[in-house]
Length: 124
Length: 504
Image (tube, rainbow over all chains, first blue to last red; front, side, top):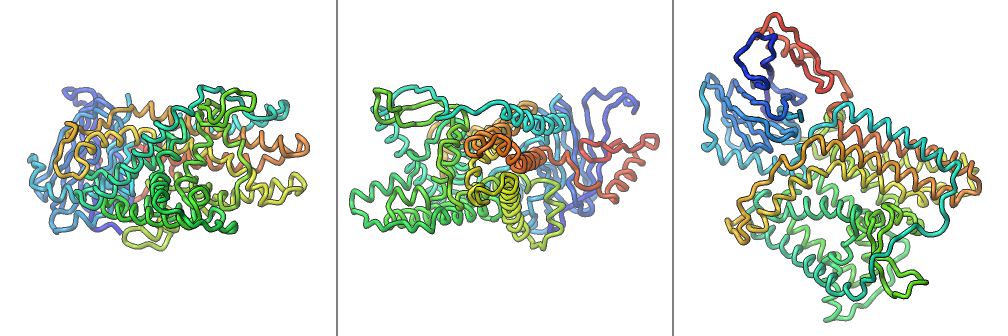
């Protein structure tokens, strides 16, 4: 059983013209992750190689997100969301794991078999 | 919006990465699932090529006699120095694994042992041997060490019991793949070192009892693995032809997988061994799939999923064995039962090797290219103590070394080619052994179907989570809809078939 790690929900905002965000560059993507309850299946954040990706993390408790393969960490606490920007350079499917930071040892006990989400970088 | 610096939680990060970078035994994979187009093309090719092969062999007799080969040169003079260098390297690598595992930094990514064992040896050599040549007999450190021991003390050799056959190797392989795929300690450097020491002691003891040749041929699991895979290899050391002036051994090129034909039928134990190897490579991929997560929920679970994964590993082995033996039973029925089922299953067992090699290539191609780069840094700092012996300790693997599209093409090509080779080998054997062409071609249909099934499973694993075996979680999609409505009232969520997720 996976302990406490969790989530849930994601909004994806792209710079598609239909959205009327004329100033955003083509290929910019924003993902907003709300870490609340436990998800059964990993989410998938789809991007394309070369995209500029903004990731916002809002959480109801202190957490740290790891994006494996890219060596990225994002921390978030209630009221203090985390945010990072990255440019997707290599294609691949990079697992994102959530670790609780409030309890010592919690990061270790979290099973790594099922990630919280995947950041997928597809070829153009 | 606050941006948090990474450094305060470095301790937690490394704690997490300890388990993370080495998920089950081997380091993490970053492969994108195969897109729908590649999946459909691969599946269509598998079925179509099975018919094409069958049709060709209805009209064409396979060539009799040995397979074609091209002799490169006689290696009798070179053999000594090359084998000597490989032997020294093999023993050195074993010593390095034990020393760095026992005394080095216990972080799996900072210690040479896990990467050398899982990435370089088990996966890397596991691809090198079938795709190029079987160098394991020379590399095998237990062979070399036992030769050294023999110089000091003459062995008292007992006859290897015939009824043991290759069963000790089956047991050893089962334990080994369980450690690799299921156990939580596969990436622990110290555990690997202790296991390597124990296996070395056991192997040397068995060699001293039954003699080197007998034990390495039948009892030692890794020699058996690499011998089976090595029969697939296009380059081999072959005995010189009788008409040749050269004596001894010749380095020769032969069609890939042709070496699987020349062998005598293996024992029942080798049939079980081979199917365990095939199920283990498939199970490695299966463990990371949504399909497995769906199955896992139905299995009695424990905290780490150890019990479920153990059941899964043994279960997929049992399913593959039943499917294969069932196909052989069907073949016996179709061909009139002049050969018993066990005899047929032994006769065709080696034809499954190309399917296993094809899948291993598809599954591990980018993984080996990415993870083997870590060796460059690790050889400079094998113990993880901050050394920099060759000035390469700071190098980080380039995860973009192969593009996803290249990986997809290689994966589909490897799986389809492996499947074609398996079907061709089975037809050649059938036409050589069955009394009539009709019984050969008809009799092979069940086995061809099982081969299509094995290959379809391997293609589906590579394509996961493209292939959804259940509908998306309804609560989840509802939440997404709710989340999105706040963002844009006009935009409606849309289900994305390729990712199985809701988008807008």
